[in-house]
Length: 342
Ligand SMILES: Cc1cc2nc3c(=O)[nH]c(=O)nc-3n(C[C@H](O)[C@H](O)[C@H](O)COP(=O)(O)OP(=O)(O)OC[C@H]3O[C@@H](n4cnc5c(N)ncnc54)[C@H](O)[C@@H]3O)c2cc1C
Image (cartoon, rainbow, N blue to C red; front, side, top):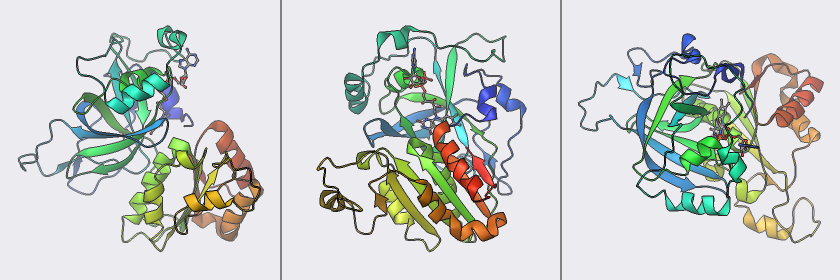
């Protein structure tokens, strides 16, 4: 995901006194509610681990101190405002536990061995550590929940495993019941009901998370009439994320989406337009999935209906630098300036 200014300030050391906490959260909660995410690290137990694609896993985390007997203060709720992110921290020491890791994670590690130089090398520290009084007991990385459940005090994150990645190495040690430590919420994106008439999102891979969570929140608000269009890009059909979720969101009157694939999902070599017969067989009824890259003319086609009234349009972007630059250059051609990059 693109690195925001906020992330550039974070040294990734998982400090208890974190530079990010100097800035208060912009997120407003409904009157009387207190967010259990209070910017201190809290323990969440791993309650589900599901492999979605070759490299992406969906983790569900449940607040450890949460009690279901109703004895907890009813005003304290776990709330993740749309588009915001949390920090996961892990010990800098070897975190392998006695408990064997989840079998899917073990298999992923076997299939994606880290080159020894990756794991042994201390990652370059781009930023000076903020809290110099604290030893480097932890390191941290940001992740963006795609969903949360106030009643159950759980949240879900999609995490793309990076061979040799430092946090990936830690995540690969987890199993059901493993305790993990998270704090939040962070991010300066704030959505207000009916703020714009339309929101169009362009996302790539796991970077779908902040835009998906924002659009989900808008659809979940019966008094929000914003029209939504999501253009999601993935490598191939096997790597499409949240496929069933997007398909069911399309049942709402105000949500449309299109999915583009950068590599052909089928190797049959038929050059049929728009897709070969085998690809069509893999597509569910009326699923708007195109077996080709997103091109400039697609962006134009999607945005032209809004170009007359650009002041009532917000474009949300999340992806690699090259992806967001490509979209932004096309927005400039259409004189669309109102754009937020996660
Ligand atoms: C605001 C924000 C929200 C985010 N939300 C999500 C999210 O919801 N889901 C998600 O999956 N990610 C998310 N990310 C990215 C995430 O924070 C991590 O950067 C990602 O998980 C990789 O972390 P890591 O510690 O495993 O890899 P790192 O150790 O940070 O390594 C990063 C990359 O460098 C490579 N690498 C590591 N060591 C070496 C080496 N010695 N030589 C060469 N290459 C090396 C790794 O293979 C990897 O590809 C988000 C990022 C931001 C800024």
